[in-house]
Image (tube, rainbow, N blue to C red; front, side, top):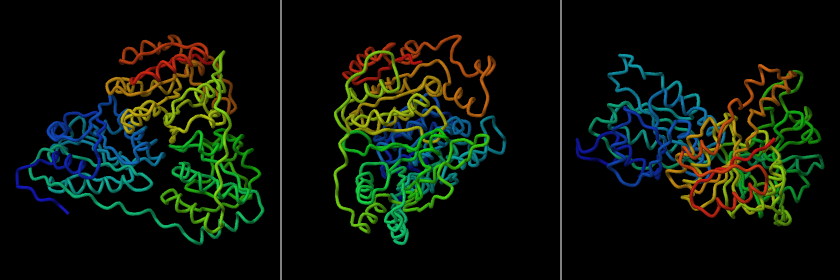
Length: 523
């Protein structure tokens, strides 16, 4: 349904802003350029949109990803033409893998200017399709509102989607825009009763069965149901490695992920004869390696799909609970909360210290890469919290995801970034946005002055890094000065060489509603 307006009252950009707000999209992460100035003007004129500036487009798209993971609804981005979209594609890739819903608004040349091949002209639609589920170019100012509601509808699906709306400058400035009413979001595809019966049969088979959870299946409502099933049948539970959002800590399952390393994953999964997938895919390696298999589960294992990634895992698990008549049972207590650890920073020591100190209902944005792969087993007894992982493997999402998550929580929740030093340099400008928005973000830079994961991967392909290779994998000569870098972006910072120093700085940061960075030296 279109809401009529008097001809000439509203330009296309204004109709777009009104339509976004009417459909519940009230946050815009932006890095605008000339082609988007009429949209910026509309944002200036029309109240209700929280506009957040990112200093590079990959910050913008990463913030929109983090916003969705916590808010559960899409924000919009504002990106400058094809090159601006290109700058944001790394974190759009991560957002797509995290099943985040985002509405991208990408400016473009005026329709009559495109044939002249101006310097910023690009095949924006083709670029957008590589990271989007839905793409459309606005061609008529009267249809911008309708196009926007279709984009919001696509992004708001249960399994969030990336929707990209390309806005030529003349469609933005032309008069004749109209506001569109929100479209109904279609329900998720129903659960197949035969799939439920088949999975129940596998669980009754007295074989070694693994229930593998992913995406929304790793949140608290799904966990409670999965535990009832596992407790009633003796099945094991694991999460996929790349889940974008997991509920963790006290009151949640002590749920571990399939290991990152292919050999460790193959060893852990080798004994399972039946794999039940709940919004998950069969486990495979991040990469192929010489003389190693790509799949990580046993070759004779039977695969059963209870629910696909686009389906509702709560509905699927509830149906399975009913089929099995699995009784209610409490999630196991993880034991006492850990104490602060002292001494040289280690993976275990940092995890226990974090679990000892983090505030209730914190959010952890984890881009610790190699250092943080085994943090889970030491943080189960922490207070209840949300844990956000790098989901698509394109490094540089940790800081912007943390920033977007803090904005989604409206500054009411402490956000803690576990951030590798190398990947932090991909999106360092996020700190500036944290300072500008006065967000309660604590960043721990895990500073080993090298791309440690790449040194490990170099060895995984059967090579030993020599001087040339190490020159491309080391972050020294000169060393990065994280305290000065943070200060230059408006964020208070300090260096820590021990876990007790780190603990003191953590406590200090938790007392202030503003960002703080800890440069933690690790070996």
